[in-house]
Amino acid sequence: MKRSYIALIALLCLAGSCADKPAPKRPEPSVPAPEPAQSVPPPPVSSAPAVPEPVFDPSSITQEEKDTAKLEIQRLIQRLNGIIRARNYDTWVSYLDPGYFAAINSPEYLNRVSQSAVLVKQKIVLTSAEDYFNHVVVPSRTNDRVDDIEFISQNRVKAYTINTAGNRLRLYDLEKSGTGWKIIN
Image (cartoon, rainbow, N blue to C red; front, side, top):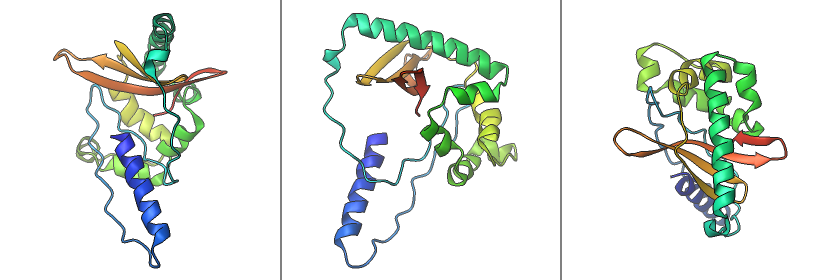
């Protein structure tokens, strides 16, 4: 779904640069309401033109590398669960990639998330990343567990949990840098 947004944005940017008049604005897709137990809505997709990523072959990751990364990520998610349960906003922010933090702190994103059925019903309007943490992350991310990971590139993974119905649900997109794993989405 994220790639379809990126492709749509790239297509719109290309179409807009070729035309003499500006392209008509398209309505933004609606953001699904956060599910209380498992789903934190993703941040908005950047409006910058998509830069094609080099082709990555997941089979280039050895089983040992995958097992090591999975164990590191499981430990990270356990730490994050404790941080979130303790409502420790400042420590939680330290695990976010700066770009992700900027995205969830944007007024546009906070407004879109505020329109979710759960928050509207509770009459909650998000005005900051800290509001997002307290009203979206805390209720939905205190007991996560990682059952599987999928490498997207050499240093990027998607972490999944499997619910009781056997569905694979994405928890986080993570990227490893010199300082460890950071949440990028």
